[in-house]
Each structure stands twice: as structure tokens, then as C-alpha cells.
Length: 296
Image (cartoon, rainbow, N blue to C red):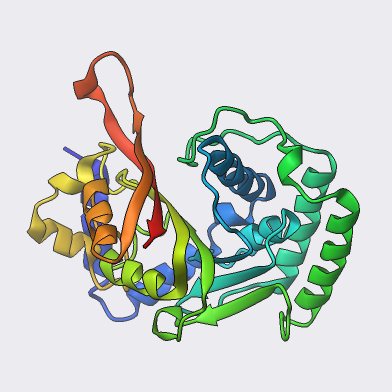
């Protein structure tokens, strides 16, 4: 018996009880988000920069948007400190804790100051050849200090009239933001309809601009097996999903790529990552993957 699936069914069934979904959402907000860990977001962003360089992708990162930052401005700080001019937080609703993000900024600056090598994380699907500190991709330290001062002032003012960071609630329905790059990590597996999100991204991206999505395809603990989500019967999946606003869409990589193609994107790079990898291909299970696409 898959005890994890049984537990997920019970938890999903409880969401049909009025008020339980709200309690589960509050509990999730109290959990530690990877975006609040300085070394994680530092390694995530630098991995992205190195990945683009190693694959000879001339992406314009001057004006970027991040979908679903989980309340963390870590990617925003890293982007600004490596040369991006503007960062847009693309959210359904604002949940930024400015005091926590100020502490995160200090921790990130220490990592940059020490020229800390990129740390390899299993849950970062952006794979690179060199994990050394990419000094040629980083702004000079003195310039970073100036930017940190400005960013701290912005945080003290709750980002009002910030020249660097903008929070855009309900971003999908807003007029075009004319972005150069859009990024997400561990988001596109949770949105209700990725097709609608890719359509919105297409509206906000300039022609010949890029988007990169790091997507997780594992079971997220719903089942004992890493790839167990796709084998859950539709009836039981209805119960597992419950009355949550969002949970997991069970899309496979190929479906994401197809939806991107229908929304004016061409795929420049995509791959899956696996667990239990060995010489037996049948034993491999998809853990995640990345898709780099260009708007045409």
C-alpha cells in the first residue's frame, strides 16, 4: 500500500470541509521556502548565468520578470547585482516581508564578497559544467556596494518608487511590461493552466526575448514513487487536489513544450533530469527539467 498516497487522499478530502484550505495555505506560508535561503538563490541565479554562457545564448537580462518568487526577492537582488537593470515580481498577490528580505540581501552580499563558488543542489535542474565563481559575469564589488545601498533604501520604503524592483500583482491581466527575460523555478508544475501562463508571458516579452523555466515533475511527496502522480486514478486525483486554489497540474515536459509552441515560442534548449539513474534506462524516473524558449 502507498501510505503517502493514502495520507494525500485524506488531506485532500479534508479541504472539502469549509475553512481547511485556508488553514493549509497558512501552514504552507510558515514553511521555509528555498527562495529564503541565500546560498540557494545565489547558486540558482549564477547557475542560470553560467548555463546561458556555456550554451552561447545571447539572452538580454536587462529587464527581467520572475513568476512565483514565494515572497523572496533573492533572485531580484542577485539579478541587480549581476547587471540587470529592472526586476518585476510577477505574482497573483503580494506577500513580501521586507525585513526578512533585507536580511537576505546582506547574506547574499557576503557570498558575492567572498566570491563563493556555486553550490550544486539536487533540486536545481539547471546543470552546468563549471561551478566556479563566474567573476566575468559579476559586477565590480564597489558597484555592488552602491546598489546594495540603494536596494536597502528601497526596502525601507516598501519598494515605493523603486528604480530596480517592481511588484506586479495580477500580472497576467496587465498591459505588456515589455520584458527581456522571464524566469521561474518550481512554479509551472503548480499553476492551474500553464497554457494561459505561457500566453501571458508571450504578451509581456519582447520579440526575440527568452524565458527559462525550471520545472519539477516528481510526486512532491503525494505518492511513494517519484513518478507516481501520473498513475493516480482521476477520481482519487480529484480528492487529492481537493478545494485548493492550486496544487499540481500533472503536466509532462512534452505538454509544456507543445503549449509554448502554440504561444509563439521556439525551444532553444530542453532536457529532463532523472533519479535512480543507472545503466538500466527503464529504472530511470523523471525528477525535473528545464526549458529555454525564445519568443518569435
